[in-house]
Amino acid sequence: MTLRIRKNKSVGKSVIIECYKRQIATRKIAIKCGFEYQDNVDGLEVFKCNN
Image (cartoon, rainbow, N blue to C red; front, side, top):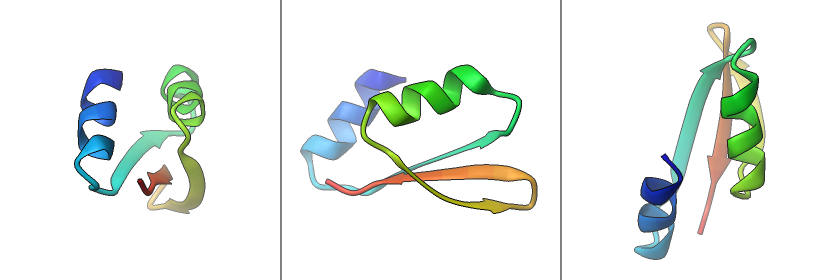
């Protein structure tokens, strides 16, 4: 997953991760890779990373 994140960021694309609140590992990866929490939409935590 982190390889895809780096690849998309390197070509200037915005990347979004959606995960359930209980998916702690996914949330940690998002924060580690520079994502910022945006909102909770339909029960999903939304993280966004702009290049």
